Image (cartoon, rainbow, N blue to C red; front, top):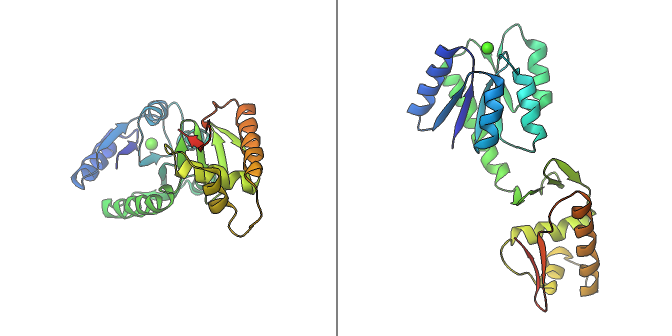
Length: 221
Ligand code: CA
């Protein structure tokens, strides 16, 4: 549960850092948008508290770029009361919530906890294998920041393989889990779908992470 606090008013940034640390969260501080982006790229944060008005790169742009990178990290935007339009664009850009300055620390803490709780429920279902990120709820697949359109069957196959990453899955098992009621499917069908998925991944420039294990099935690693 690591939190990044991005705020150019150093006193406020440090006060927030101290407060969150006291609550048991490891905290990093960034004082401008550029270093925030650098740090967010290197570290795997669970939440970013992001001030809107920042030097170098503003909060909206930081938020936009983080989302464009495919990250689903929780983002709590801090904004001045005068920034009503900003608040709206903050949420449009992908912030999870916002808080109007000045605020009391317990208010911030409540929002932080709510986002972390919500993310914990949602994010546990996001599947990753190397560059591939699959969101079962939104039915979306990304390789890096390229979204790949899959048919629902292709999606189902890849989702199942990614859930079983590191283990060989037989064609029979795939048929059983992905096709549910369709009784008369053939393993040849799986092969065709797998080839289509591979082609789409290759077209997007992704490495082939689906291995065929002869006589046994498929393996995503
Ligand atoms: Ca500021």
